[in-house]
Structures are given as C-alpha cells and as structure tokens.
Length: 258
Image (spheres, rainbow, N blue to C red):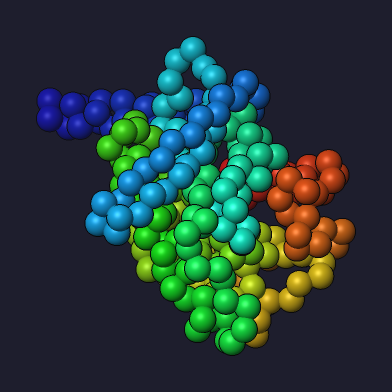
C-alpha cells in the first residue's frame, strides 16, 4: 500500500511539472498587450530614492511562475528617464509574458561618472551603488509581488548598466538565473556555467582586456558571446533602427527561453 501511494505521488508530481512546462511554453508563444507603470522606491538605509518602471502583460488570469527581468540602463549623465529608453526590449519581453522592471540608477544629484583614470577603479563606487539598487528592488518585489518566480531571476544591462549587472552576479550569484550583457566593457564576465552568461557585443566598442572569456572558456562554461556586425554601442537602446532592435530582441528571447 505504501509503495502504491509513493508511485501515485510521484506520478502526480510529474504531471504537475509537465503542466507547468506546457503552461510556460504556451505563455512564451503568445503575444500579450502590455501595460506600464512607474514608482519611486525609497531605500531608507541609504536614504536613496530608486525610480523604477514596470512592464507587464495584460492577461485575464495571472501567469503562473512568471519570470522576472531586471533591466539596467547605460550611462545617461544623471538625466531622469534613462531607464525608460529601452522600451523596445522591455515592452517586447512583457508582451511575451515576462515581468519587467527597469531601474533608474542615476539621480540628478549624483556625481557624474568619472571619465579620467582607470575605469575599474574610479567607477567602482557607481557600480557598487547600482548593485545595491538591484538588491533593494529585488527584495521589495519579493514583498509586493511574491507570486513571481524568484528562482529564475534574469538581469539585462547595457554599457555601464552591464557592468553593474556583471558586478551584481559576482556578488550575489545565488540570486540570479541568467544575465545578458549588452556591451559591458569593464567588469569581467564570470567564468561560470551557473548563472548562465550571455553577451551581445557592438561593432565599434572593444571590451577591456580580460572582460570577455576566451573561446575555450565559452565552450567550457556554455557562455554565449555574439557580435552584432551592424550595431554600434550607442544604438543598443531606443536610438537603434527597427532592424537592429529586432535582431537584439531575437537574441534576447532565444537566451531567455533556453
């Protein structure tokens, strides 16, 4: 009798797992209308205001185990709204069933990003601040959106935001499932198979020595590095052409669906 019950429980668990996979596949194959919103989080421990933009699917029923994507923008000279300048990808991801949060890392009162000196040294405080922004937002989301799938958190960052993203995964690897760097140039990509590491590279801006894994390291850890032959560094946000945006989104969706 005990053996029969054990078998029955196993079959039920396998059935639930199968249904979960089917549900996720169905969600990713659909295209939903998208709603957007914004809010200001306050990290009282740092007395830090963190503006965020939200993008989500419009659905009748909640998406089960909805995956989270956190986006970090490129350097915007402390101008407000930089986190909303990647709408081509935030809205695309939301239309495919992801819950997307884009963080404004810079405030008008912040010091400007140092342009002189060794970037890994003089910009480190900027990246550290960004990682704490991501950590705070992630913890807040766990309170206000506990139904999200926090076992599969995905991070996307462009340029300076890519360096923030890479530093975050170095500091908190257990909190992240996948990261996608859009042309980060300073922080070394982790040589690891988990979290999963992906990077899209521009045609005009080389990374610093050691940032990108070697071919052998890419093969060893399953890291994917793709060079976009027709996209420059500054065209990876909403300034890019329709063709460029379509190519980037195609790669992003492929990375996230693996």
